[in-house]
Each structure stands twice: as structure tokens, then as C-alpha cells.
Length: 299
Image 1: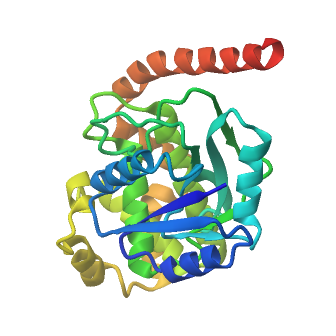
Image 2: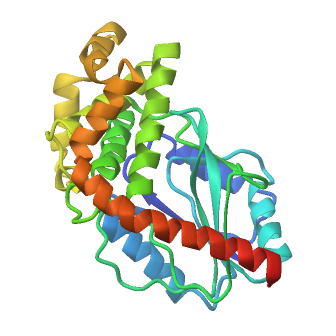
């Protein structure tokens, strides 16, 4: 199987490690395309257009972010074998091991050449699912994880990661709240905070400081996407040299206990908005689970 690997790069510290891990793969029938320093939505839209334009030349498409590193030399072969065993599989979403939270999070997307992406107005959750004729797989089980996510972020990269996750929590530019996605990102930040308290690793604290900037209304989606370096200058001026105890002191009032964190969450997403969206999203999610169960049992 021929594989086109697509990577979006915005200064990630692991980019060279990412490329080396790809070059070391035992499956060698692949090409690599990289888009650098584009706004988040533009980068994803361009990548997915490239995938569709190359559908006659490649069997599989893999979105390997610049901060993702294959865990072994056989990782790509493992992914290829998955699609060979499941000829109707069109979209595989596999968990990756996330360094910041020390948990498995969903993050590695692979597609067959049958997928079709339609234009989307979505500005925040830009990894939208394509139209597919066959099956989807989403799993934290084998063969996942075959990739490590952001195993060695720079301090600014860690801070920016926290900004991005918090933007996905609060979703201020959306009329409705994607409840499950919001909670998933909030739980991830909670895991990062607990790991920071256990380890005193400065970059983990910087992730939470980045999230705090969003929660306090000091960073917007526009500022995150802007490549003018204003966010980097703010980081270097206010946060880059903070010692561990100073980071903890800044964060304790919001993050010390689970009750405090939930209070912060509810203030930011707004209770009415949360309940309204949950009343719509939860029945849809239950219906989808029921459909998948029936399909598995009877089809």
C-alpha cells in the first residue's frame, strides 16, 4: 500500500524527531508532504484537498502532526496491516500516548483513498470527519498507541498547547457547545495539572498557564491563529522564566481541588449553554452508540 503522510508544522520542537521516526519505518512505500506556518483551519483544509487530489496515486493517507513520533520502526506497517485486514475500513482514529497528561488521547487519523471532505465553516474543531462509503474505527486499544504525542515540547509550545486546549473547552465563538469535546479537553487539562503537581515539570505548569489565559479572556482564537508572534512575546514577557512555585501560586486558586476546577469550568462554558447543548448532544450520542451495537450484532 502506498501511503501519503501529511504534516502541519507551526514550530513544534519534535519536528526533526517526527521526520526521523518516519524515515526509519520498515514500510517504505510512502511520501511526505509538509505545510508550514499556516493558520489552523487553512492548514487542515489544504491538507485534505491534497489528500483528495492524490486519491488515484495513494492507497492510504496519514495525518502525522509535527509533534507526533512513531513509537517503533514497525508502526507504519502496523497501520497498513490494519487497513489490509479490514478492506472496508475508510477512517481509523487511533489513540496516541500524550506526554503532557501521561494518558491515551485520540489523535492519529488515517484514511483510505475513498474518503471525501466537504467544505466546512468549522474554525475550532478542524479535524472534521470526511464522507466515507465504508467503516470507521475509533479505538484506544490495539493497535494503538503507535505514536507518542508531543514527547519533548519547547516551553512556548507547551504554553500554546494549553491555549489551544482551553479554546476547545470554552468554544466562545460557537453558538452551541460541543459538550463531549469540551469535557474531553477539560479532563485532559485536569490530568496535566495533577501530573504537574506530582512531578514539578515546568512545561506542564506552562500548559495550565496557557489555558488560564483563555479562561481569563486574555487570548482568543484569532490570537492563537495569528502568526505575528504577539502570543510568543506575551509568553516570554510574563511566563517564560517563572519558577515552579510561582507557577503553582498563580494557579492554586482555580486548580487546587476538583470542586474549584468544576466551578471554573461552569463559569466559562455557562450553565444554560451547557444544559441546552447537552439536551441535544446526549440523545444523539446514545442513538449512535445503539446503532453501532445493533450493526455489530446483526449486520
